[in-house]
Length: 160
Image (cartoon, rainbow, N blue to C red):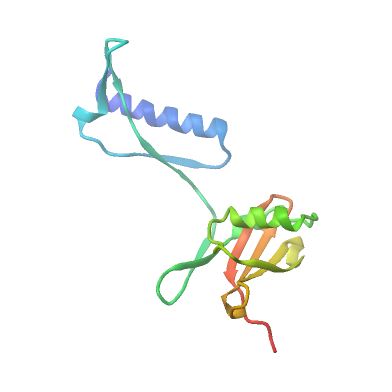
């Protein structure tokens, strides 16, 4: 029988091997600490103890910026890694909005008011709430080739 520390190290190694096999990127597994008496679970079918180990799987990123408002709320971000392999490909408005909504930062009710090709072949979407200040809108940049959001930022009000 292995001691608990050896089993926990094996669990971390197995978690990382599984992540590398099924996901892309560089990962780090961080075990969620449990008291030793909770880490071993009796299996009544196998009639033995099993190590039950929960982990947080971290993916390493390059440069990632988070934009906060005056009240320290997240209002946008820039993921610089998403510029890689960026090239123009036409996307329908529905496809582009689905990609943007996957960011989870779009407020309900925002309407697409402009869609155009942006710098380095990205797709730029301008979203605004109906009937409100244009300054409450968002500018979303999408890498069409990777179908990924590069940035989601508060839009600047258009010049009068």
